[in-house]
Image (cartoon, rainbow, N blue to C red):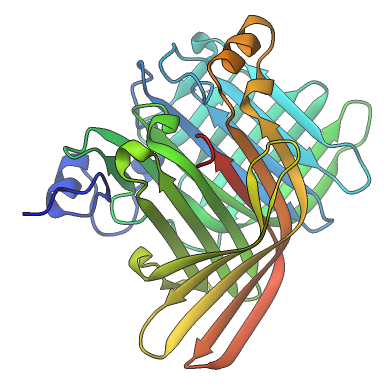
Length: 361
């Protein structure tokens, strides 16, 4: 008898029953609070957008600092705003647990004067930080999706959980940005929202991953490729969604192959970075898709040890914390083949990331 897998997607009937999730459409409660906030657990609600003037806006609501899930609740909002011809703004709103609330019935998270709320189709997000106010509305164009239950189990006996729910794989964004002392400015674009949670530090489970989402002509794409840590057999965990005109056309992870091209060592993070990240999806004997993420610039290059100061920074370095997070922008191209013949291609700007939680092996 073969040994049980050390990392697996929770896709069995008993998994659905245990998690209370149905095989049908995603339900609103799934985007509500999914953890207790206790030691080991973490949770975040993420929004990003590529705006029509070339700006990118990323907003994340956290229950805890990413590197300290064992600690008490430490609610935080992170805002990353990158506008053409302006200095990048990276702002944080920190709060006490008393200044934070989250519903279990649907997405409604409040952290001080900021909120993130919605119903799987329409979301409103507001952040107020250091003289900057951002109000964004996201209206879904592709239905909510998850791979099986949305949960990946780690360990021979499913001891640990990492979960991912793309609540809005793609949507239309209207954002109002107000800088103190200036008139409000309204922008539009394409956006995305997902929700992650788990019960142990991700660095215990995952070594690194590539993740990206994009619109390319009539296509919407979410693509991720996760690499488990050594303790879990370096398992490779692909996830992909390809939709056309709002309808899902490909979403079976077993049909994905990742190709990394033009790889270099990033000078700041010292992590290997691919200028081209390619997902190849073989649908059947004739039809296949290629999704190509071509990097043009690095929007964020952050070493985890540098996100803390003082004694925490020194302790992080002593503990050999060398994790890093990089976010990129560039072009994303979707190609559809019938046999060897290219029958369709589309390309547009996109945003993607490389998260390195462990050491480079």
